[in-house]
Length: 346
Ligand SMILES: [Zn+2]
Image 1 (spheres, rainbow, N blue to C red):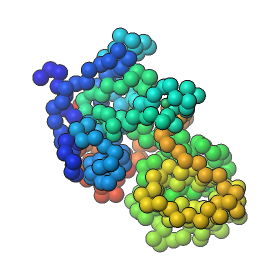
Image 2 (image 1 turned 90 degrees about the horizontal axis):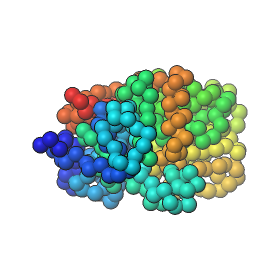
Image 3 (image 1 turned 90 degrees about the vertical axis):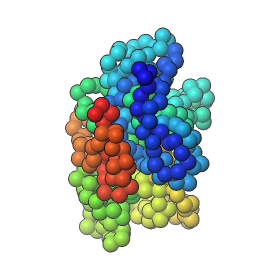
């Protein structure tokens, strides 16, 4: 059983995951085998766990799930240079083709042949993961492994938040999931004036407040429009980050933007929006869709922001051994969680 490992597998086309022994992956000529230390549960993993419509359409039964992780180099193929055994690493979760127009232009986040780790190929919720060396990210061992375990998600937040200049600007973030909360922290550190975060979940709004939001709004009780005066805003928000995937949140964001404002869209809409595009046209808004993170400039910025004091620790609300993965998913499904970290060494 030497060459077997524990892994969380989407064994059946129904809710749940199965912890089982699977073979340790074979290391190809250009691959790095990573011994996983810690992983973090992403919203995507929850979709796969719950086996909702999105998961049924996009996930292959039988794969090992998970794509947020930190670990150490355990082995590498003959074609790999520049790594050492035992070195601390994480990995970019999108395996791109390297030869399409966008890849060649350094825009791998727009590759048309992307394969998602833990979605379309075996992922990181296991004792080992194998990925192409080009996707491996070296991580300074000074960083706390718990934080690094969700650098993948932090990358989405970083890429989205840094898309537009936020210095001295008023930023509206709709959706206080972990990425929305991290975005509040990033905008705060990068000099935004007001950072208003909206959601329906008070637990997550409190976390957003702790991490840097200057005001939070539970839209069950309050309207965004009501905060403008209090925050000394004259014309509306300058920058909007849509992170909820709610069509109505996007519509109210458009309503609350100043003319000429800029919106980044990260939240995946579960129901299509019935947006009146005239509101965008007459306001002269810029809307940009965001997927993943820049490869690999975003990873650089993430680490340097931590260097200069960005503290993501308050976002971690639950810590479990991988054996208690069901408790982790339960916490995620309860809505009363930030990031849930699983330890793969105990
Ligand atoms: Zn490509």
